[in-house]
Length: 289
Image (cartoon, rainbow, N blue to C red):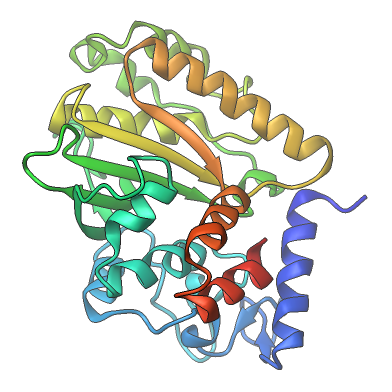
């Protein structure tokens, strides 16, 4: 059976071939051909100027490339490209509450959400130079119970050969960060400095997101979604089990955390919005479902 990573990459290469999209390697002529020649070939619609600026100022260097070396977002298996393909469509049309409800943040028909920001930074403490970048943040009306909905997007990363790191001990030294987070603090100690508990889930990254959001908003004023791509077999089952484990720990500390797969999200979007958004639904269903 193909590994989860190989399944995702192979499926995306097949999609590109079906649409006559030429590909290049990560170093131009070198490396496996999994990058589009142009960023727009990897996106349903071109990046909006505001989103382009947000990615430029993010820490991931997602859209900075050259003719010799493509940008990270040009990779067919790029999680940032997938995030843009899912969220920018609704952002551009002012239908932010629709995608928020499909993600499970609020009831369908709710009109609490106002704008979407990519790669938004949330400082944990001035002692830490690089603040966590959250992939997608949905900002809500001032009257909303939750000031924002945050989304961590994962595509192929959970199934790659490179293992994720644990949590640096410096975070554990700041005891004030862990106020009201007894169980997450216990988990943080277990995965510091190395994470031997999770093989797919990057728990240290999620914990840092929670710490940044909590520092800015407190425990009660945000919701956090882990949006991930499911694969068949042992890796997919392991990933789901790890997500369920982390979800239980986060919720036990009062953090409003939940998870949804891209496949589940696409089914929901197809169910409610295919008639009015057929070209878009066809694109994401064919490519990612």
